[in-house]
Image 1 (tube, rainbow, N blue to C red):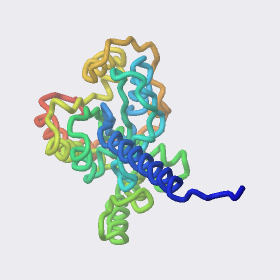
Image 2 (cartoon, rainbow, N blue to C red):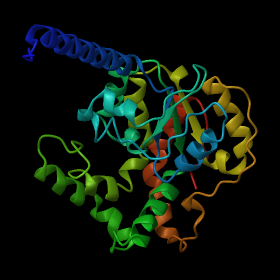
Image 3 (cartoon, one colour):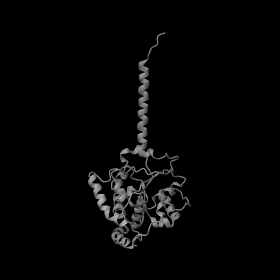
Image 4 (cartoon, rainbow, N blue to C red):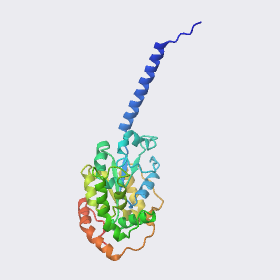
Length: 286
């Protein structure tokens, strides 16, 4: 018996298979487009963001995610399907999922990017005395062999370091992780001008979507703050029993009193503007 190769039925099968695969891909893409994080921890660096995220991860309705995605600053070109793939799926609709990347607060491109994709996302921001924040960032770099200058020389060299990087990257100093390494590392003082960064975010989001946490209050009363955080996120109350363990508790040599006094004077007008903008006191004038 002569074997007959049936080309047309086979082609029909191939066509149907390809059509089904294409439909599946479209549905997967649509699913990624419809997916959204419930919250973002946007900063600030060296201000307890890791502790905050770890505490939220303790909640039974939280989809755990431990690594920073840096989607909105360094990986935006990867697309929303890639972003969704960085997280485990929600087991049930009432589970929440969130991202933590402290550079989001400082990068001027991020607020508009977030707004364009997830206009209803809730934003969490921890602010620390900008002097202490800068000093602990400095010592974090020293311990990791990324800084050789003294603190005083490092803050004096900050503008020069950042301006040199801008010259090398004229199309945008925040374009990707490699090009912004100096800015991310050595922006000690500029990161602490919080009012300008908060204004950028409030230009795209209402105040009701932004929860600002005082690091000093968080360190003093983490359980009380976490009760407010869970309420803000819309999940049931969950008691946190752990203590704050982030590296900001590591000891550092005392700062030169003269340097601190100069930084107090520098930050005073910016802190006052921030307090007026948010309608609250932070007591950082010391």
